[in-house]
Amino acid sequence: MNATAAEAAEAVRNAPGGPKIGAFFDFDGTLVQGYTANSIYRDRIRKGQVGALELARVIVAAVDGTVLGGDPQTIGTIGFAGLRGRTVDSVADFGERLFVQKIAGTMRPEARDLVRAHLRRGHTVVVASSATRVQIEPVARDLGIPHIVCTELEDENGVLTGRSTTGMLWGERKAGAVRAFARARGIDLRRSYGYANGAEDIAFLGTVGRPYALNPHPMLRRAAEEYGWPVLLLREPKSPGLCAYLGTAGGLVGTNIGLAAGVAFGWLTGDRRRGVNTGIELSTGIGLALAGVKVNVVGAENLWKARPAVFIANHQSTLDVLVLGTLLRRDFTAVAKKEARLDPRMIIIGTLLDPAWIDRSDLTKAKNTLDGVVRRLRAGTSILILPEGTRMPTPRLGRFKKGAFHIALQAGVPIVPIVLRNTGELAWRRSMIVNPGTVDVAVLDPIDTGDWTVDDLDERVAEVRQRVTDTLADWPREVSAP
Image 1 (cartoon, rainbow, N blue to C red):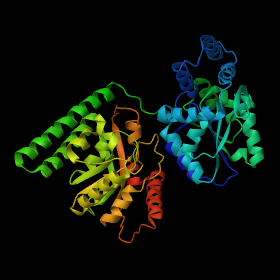
Image 2 (image 1 turned 120 degrees about the vertical axis):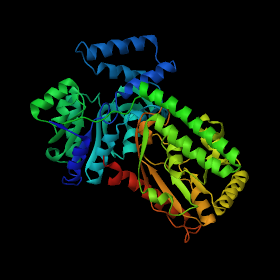
Image 3 (image 1 turned 180 degrees about the vertical axis):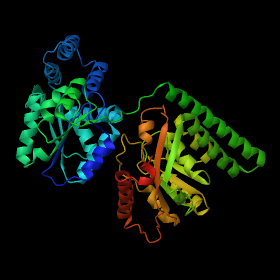
Image 4 (image 1 turned 180 degrees about the horizontal axis):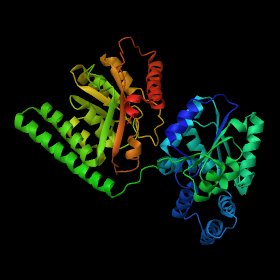
């Protein structure tokens, strides 16, 4: 029988809780789309780290293990040998970089929801995979998964030997590792959950009482039908198609047309501020419409309750600028790092808003710029700041810098948090292409800063960040409802 991710997550939320119940997630093809080993090999080949002999052996092993019915673990053995002589730290750094550049964009949003449901029930959540810790650890940390059962690499004094201490956790060996983990932790496997996508995971899913075949390969689907296991069909991360490319091009043209119209209107009327406001509304509205992006907002009244204000937002995507512009619409400007001045994607901010460019390399200049921002706030212009300081690779929040909160404190204005749920799904942080779809936004209640002090600012920043985190974790039904 088929089930949706929402139905499965709801079932978890209504199920018994506690650490004696496990939730075991496969990695490649389950938490992430595709196989992360492919990204590793592509990176190594690009850097000239894979010789002709190793590449030939990998190709032969891949064909033998998938098409000819040979041992699929052979390719893992070859991969381990290719890491011989590298330090544990350098390989871990490589895994972190690969996560940001490639793997983060392949994570399944609905798998994140399932993981969150289990964590909130207090279940013992585990990644169980034949992949290595290098591949898994950044994803597990991003999802908040505390436990990993995986293929472990052997090292001597911090240098990899090219061998594994566990052997490749494939098939029955993976199932045995899950059973051993459960025994050590006192987990009741009969009450536990398992999620996987491949035929090699039939034995693993058979060890738990609540198995789910997730976007299954044909052999696993047949096994699921035979054993009566539910099948979960999770949506894949969006890949740009022809509509996305055409929509992005149209959005850029529409944005520039709206921008030009606003500038012309301001020049004709002799009222620059009206021209700026008109340009913002036209450029962002037309740009989003032509890109096929709709904005679904809860708490829109909070955008106008207290102005001027310092508006803050989480930052996932190039798309954030257009979405925030269409929300705030008028009488605001932004604070941005000086390096972004040369980014062509900042054309709207740079041309219309006259933003405050912060030179983070010069503290004196940065302070003078922020003093100017405070004066603009007191004169009635709201300020938009993205306190993470950079686009994050996933919806997980980064650390909030204190600049926005200092400014609000000095100017005596409220802070209004804007929470963007899924702009990163429509336009991943490293992509210029926007996929059509709906962006979910929650505008939280204005936060009065009248009783704030410099001494308690760290605590205040943590409180605001927690509000944003809680909103992302428990999204308002008014937004998520179809």
